Amino acid sequence: MAPFIYLASQSPRRRQLLEQLGVAHELLLANAAGDIAEDAEAIEAEREGEAPRDYVQRVTAGKLDAAVARHARRGLVQAPILCSDTTVALGLQILGKPADADDARRILRLLSGAEHEVLTAIALQSGAQRLQALSVSTVRFAPMSEAQIDAYVASGEPMGKAGAYGIQGLAAAHISEIRGSYSAIMGLPVYETAQLLRQLGWAL
Image 1 (cartoon, rainbow, N blue to C red):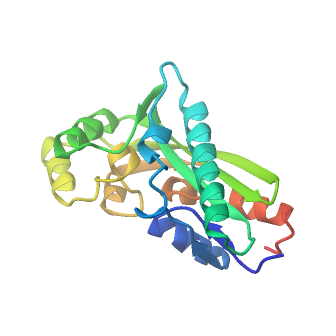
Image 2 (tube, rainbow, N blue to C red):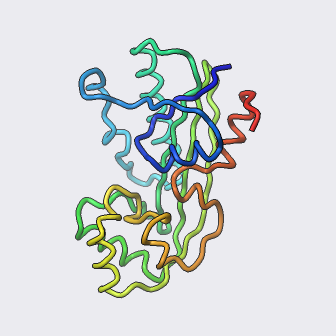
Image 3 (cartoon, rainbow, N blue to C red):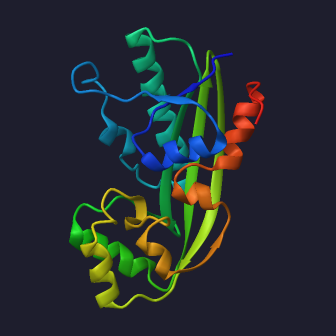
């Protein structure tokens, strides 16, 4: 068994959570030179009528497919490959990464005073074996004033994050309740990740 895994994610939060588990890992990321064929935007594009749970699992599987192909092209040492994706859903409406500051404000207004789901899917490939899991958590925002929304958007924190917020940052001041996995809301469900690695023989 390889003493490490590949993590196909640029998220520093996922790296931090793997370190918390004590799992050694190396990044397996696309690069402009050799991975032109990979189209992350196409993988993440929503399909009409697709439920949030189906969406996040499909996107995660697509990202893992791309990572497995990337690994093969580069002729790297064999080791499990881990992918994860997080989606924020208000009912059946998927709230992705904001396009700009105005879009971030729009999303935060929707979340203000409301309860939403955070869905994080993980997929782990080891040779021909693929293991998958889904974590669903519930988050409630307290009502936010326009001034509070403006201040949070001005911090820059909402950009690049599903649902226009990160629970581990300034947004925590506006979150009144969570039910589920805090680490999954951050981007990687630690318990489910450990469970999948145990199935591959890791002692966690």
